Structure formats: C-alpha cells, structure tokens
Length: 250
Ligand code: DGL
Image 1 (cartoon, rainbow, N blue to C red):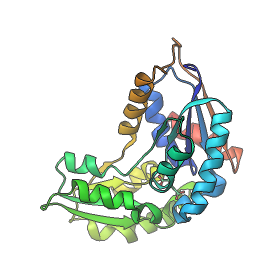
Image 2: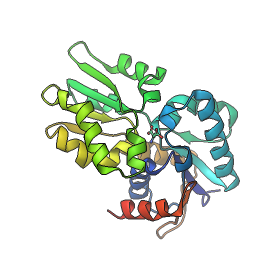
Image 3: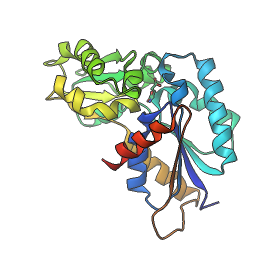
Image 4: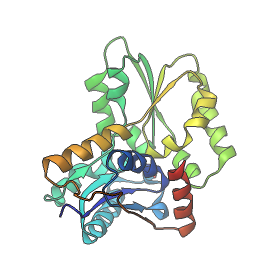
C-alpha cells in the first residue's frame, strides 16, 4: 500500500496551494488531484449538498487506491470531515482549516479571517476563534461571498473590485489576514494591493506536515527513490488542468 497515491480534492483550483506544499514536503509520493470545478463554489452550498458531493469524491479516490485523502478545502473540511471520518472509518483524512491558531501563535493582534460564507459561519471557525483568542486580540471574521467563484473563472477586474469592497476599510486596523479558503492563496498579490502591510497566513505548510506525520505513523511513506507522479482530474474542463499546471510551475 506504500506506493498507493495521495488523493487530494477541492472545489477547483484552490487546492493547488495545498498540493504545491505537499509536493515540496513529500516529493517521492504519487498524487491524484481531483478538482471539482463543476460544483464550485462549495462555500455557498448546504451541509447536506456538500456531504453528497464529497462522499462521491471520496468513493472515487478510494477506487483509485489512494492511501490517504487530503481535503484541500476549508469549506469541505469544516462541513463534512467529521462525518466522512465516521462513514469511511478505515480511511485516513487530513483536512484544512483557517490558520487562526497560526495568527495567534505569532502574536498578531488584529486579525482578519477571510473565508467562504459556509466556513465563516461554521462551528469549527467559532471554536478556533474561542480556543485561541486572547483578550487583547481582535478578529474580524469576514465572508468572501463569490470570491472563490471569481478566482475559478479568472475574472481579474471583478476580483480587484470585490477585494477593495471587502478589505479596504481594514487597511490601518489589521496586522494579519488568514486566507481561510484555499482559493484565496492564489490571489495573494491582489490582496497585498489592498492591504500592503498585512501578513498573509495560510494553513498549507501545516497540512503538508500533518500528511507526512500520518504517513510516517502508519508506515505508509513511499519507498520510491525518484520523484513521484501527478495526475489532475477536472470535473468541468481540461483547459483548467492546463491552467493548474501553469499555477503549479510558478
Ligand atoms: N477552496 C475552498 C475552501 O477552501 C472553497 C471554495 C468554494 O468552492 O467556495 O473553502
């Protein structure tokens, strides 16, 4: 089973930010990345819809003999990971949650959490804020409604407009912004234009380290010497696979 693949999924291109970090950390592994662009945006769906969609993806990844499944999506993690672990009890799942803990561990005092509408309102984000926030810290929990969809469609002007609308009033109020949706890691430069002095934090390194730890603990690390393979599937269009390869090569 050691040379089975690592399965990774997201509602589209956002998961590439996690995948990139995984490949850097575990270059000898084989990867199967499932981009579910046809169902984007996940962040504007219900828990019931998301469980149906994500169960179908997990079934597919298990059929393809994945040894671990990485949910490279904050929305799918906060909505469904607990249930998926119950349904697929022999499968190892690693999820992605907004890096709110990282912000506080690094002593940032005024932090924006920017995530999808689903994640913003989720119980998990509420817990992360309550568990890690100290009295002298402020968190602004903001919803990036429609932002993941615009990133997926590569609508550059509309992305800039929406970021201005959502973030410009925080310019002098914040020292860090948590990229609480994996799609947002793809627009760091655009966010920097609105908030030039704000640190941008994501959970990608944490996810990659956790995958490594899980594979080590379960004796599942690949024994291959050379570089592993990468297969990308996109549920909407092969053109998005080309765009993904381009993003990965940057
Ligand atoms: N990339 C996903 C996340 O991290 C969700 C984007 C979406 O489909 O709404 O939440």
